[in-house]
Image 1 (cartoon, rainbow, N blue to C red):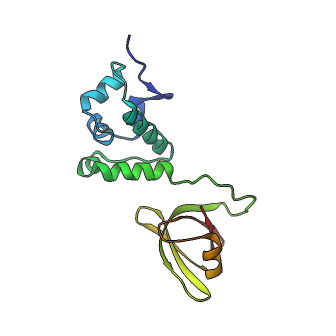
Image 2 (cartoon, one colour):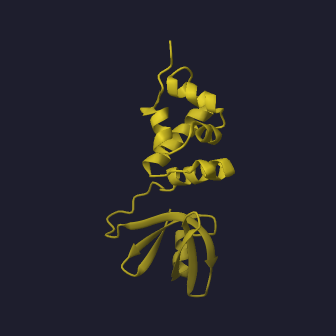
Image 3 (cartoon, rainbow, N blue to C red):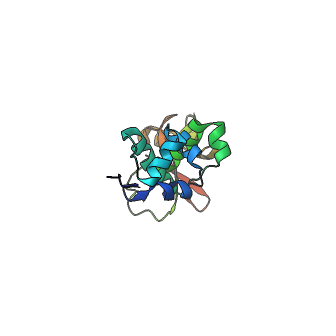
Length: 165
């Protein structure tokens, strides 16, 4: 009996098409052969545990609008996969209460220059996209902010408010 070609409600072929990838490119991302992807799509075989988890992450990235070009995947499949995972899991789950600011950009702190009174903070919110903010050094300490840590830049009018992720 053939295994269903749906992956937690997601058809492998539809996922691949949504990501705008060839079978060979999807295979490179999940560590399989293009023929194996074809078998998944036809329901002849099912992805192994790690491949199924990677496909679920790719489905989550697709829901966030992530797509990769076949050429980019062929050039560097690990970079493409890292970008997909970043897109899939970028948003930390956190409750910021009843803030009126709706422009929230989660990311990783890539630079922190501490001063006596204020500190400069740079958050990478997407690959090669950074936002900067100047906040009090007391806030840096209170929020436990450090290079490599996660933070959320919250933009309200012309100000960037930073919250610990």
